[in-house]
Length: 130
Image (cartoon, rainbow, N blue to C red; front, side):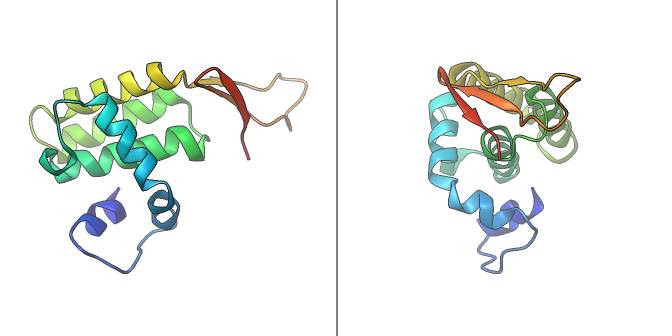
């Protein structure tokens, strides 16, 4: 989150292991934010909130190593600590809406097959995690 936040203020040196990966998907991530917060243009969203949302949506759609509920909980906690008084509600609402609209559901592998990749259902289609 810190790296994406620094990037918003013109830090051209990518910091952190995931920033480059997030930036590759930034247009799609921002489109998801716009869709799920239609009353808020991106340039009007608090920079901390925007950084948290971008990081969380990237984790939900591309990283896929953490269950959606945990990603949302962590994002809300970060918003409580670093955002404004209403940031946590805003973050929770946007991410909750995105998870529902994108139909992000994590299916755990069976106990017998520990090497089976996690499958994520997105918009009605199954996608194998890497």
